[in-house]
Image 1 (tube, rainbow over the protein chains, first blue to last red):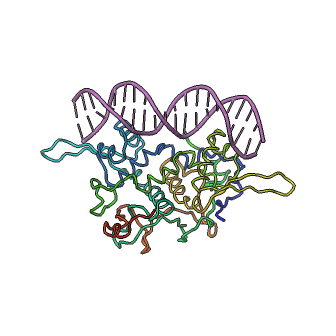
Image 2: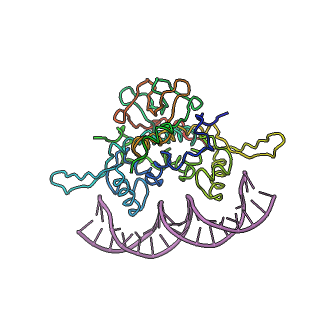
Image 3: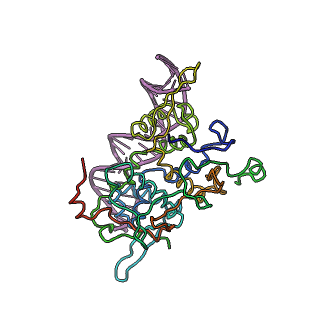
Length: 170
Length: 170
DNA sequence: CCGTATCCTGATAGATACTG
DNA sequence: CAGTATCTATCAGGATACGG
């Protein structure tokens, strides 16, 4: 029986911690749309140019432009205009560290799709370039344990007292 | 310079492997909308009842109903009607194994938000219930290495020859 | 409680034509 | 190439009222 996470007392579903401040919701706000996910996927695949994003994700130029602008504004992609001598300048977009750090999320979505959709595990796989072995997403605690859902526990980051002492800025 | 994944030859961005068959795109098709993500988050948090989903995710009843129906149809949630003796029956929804297996993706989104949004790491954290240590998302290869983006390589799951020998079922 | 039914808004995004 | 400009269709989702 696959259950939910364990919760420490002050976090039970009824008590008032505002779910809208949850990092998942905020992250989804940044990645508001499906096209944003797919643009990022393309960036991980090495795409840098406007036209390639448009064609390979299957978006209209207007949508591509809007997403790229948004992702640059949010700091996940950055402009990178380069010039091969003798040719005209090309514009490009590439992942920032902030954007690149989303890869585990994309990898987890891919892994889920490989496991539960389609019949035979998806068209591509992730490997360790060094040893050639397949790569999977894991949840590890800092004690070094590889965890299952049932072993996880959701806890408040700070005690209510600490939060009063150090209120949110702005 | 945070770059993209390494790719094996047959996967360069120009060659024709259909990106629409990519597991990320397919998974996003299932989780089409933001509310679906948030409903699942709530399910991991232990919410089971219609009204709690509605209130805690902040959706209209119509949207809640549509998402729950969809998630049940897709096999991520299942109905669970239960009855405390002497009370009327309650309806509920709970995660299936298929739904529960999405947790790493949610955890990765949460971790990204904790790192890159907000000032101080988000309102809640994930811990190992046994040892109390904080939990992080990792990419591990089956050789046991903990990997960074630069060490990853995207490869076709099967060779074209193998795909001909063993064509897609159904 | 657990939903369904309506109405209405804005955002997402497809198609297409055009410009530096 | 790398976009901008329209014009439209579709859909996500808020508000509200109502029924089992």
